[in-house]
Image (cartoon, rainbow, N blue to C red; front, side, top):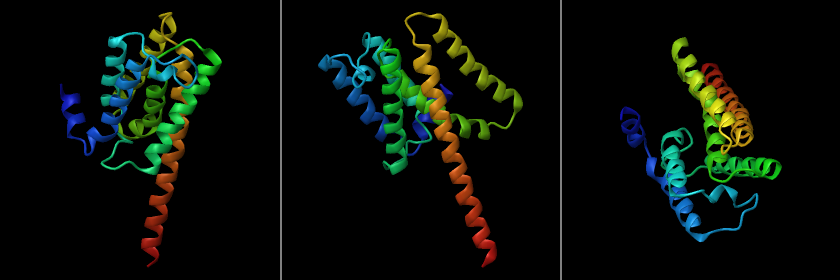
Length: 178
């Protein structure tokens, strides 16, 4: 319950999440043809759709702000394109999870930096490992869709983390020169 309270307190929580959830719900009802561009919006059943909606509200925190930024749009578009490429290669999954794992991967570098205790980092990484093992073992889950999109998301997240650190360092350097 504490996680849900933290999620609800975030500034601008409802904007991006609400738009994504509404779009997912409407597209679920439209009965789209299955291909690499629509597979992310097709769900096996209503419980699959609801599970993805809950996952969105928990995982989408660092790119969700009170206004839609160029970066958040770029991250969501990158997630969609990466998941579409993965689906085009594997063609064995439906649902929004490829995009969600990309977002989770995007958050990973910042999450690991913010977790101070080594034991907490081990717990966090163990959770990711457990989820990946589960998606490898259960035939109806696509390991490749989850793993590769998370990996690409983590790479993009690390790139943006380095850019942000560089900008911060340059700002500090310029402030000390004045």
